[in-house]
Image 1 (spheres, one colour):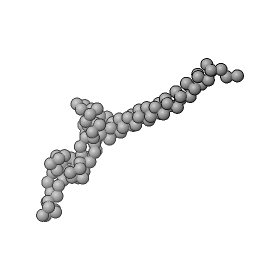
Image 2 (tube, helix red, strand yellow; image 1 turned 45 degrees about the vertical axis):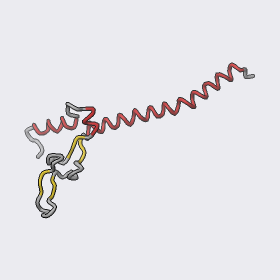
Image 3 (cartoon, helix red, strand yellow; image 1 turned 90 degrees about the vertical axis):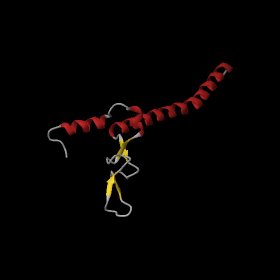
Image 4 (tube, one colour; image 1 turned 180 degrees about the vertical axis):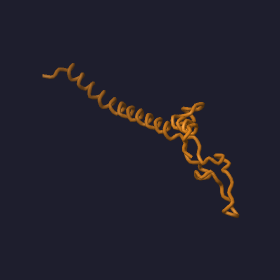
Length: 110
């Protein structure tokens, strides 16, 4: 026979599972999304420049063969992503550091 004390305990457990389980699932999903975004910033810290489409050049409007360096990105064709600017303001991320090391090597890629 089920008494009131046991019924109340089971009801309390059921309510906690129904209320807290979705919150825990959302918390785990949020942490996983943050970690994956942070890792993405570590390996891919740049995005294409929106002004020049990533080419680093602006073509002339009258003569299409004339071009000049993009004024927004300075001719590089890329900008740092928002997360790289926020989380790594004064330091280089992993991909930028590795590229800097590669440029100083003797047999560096051209």
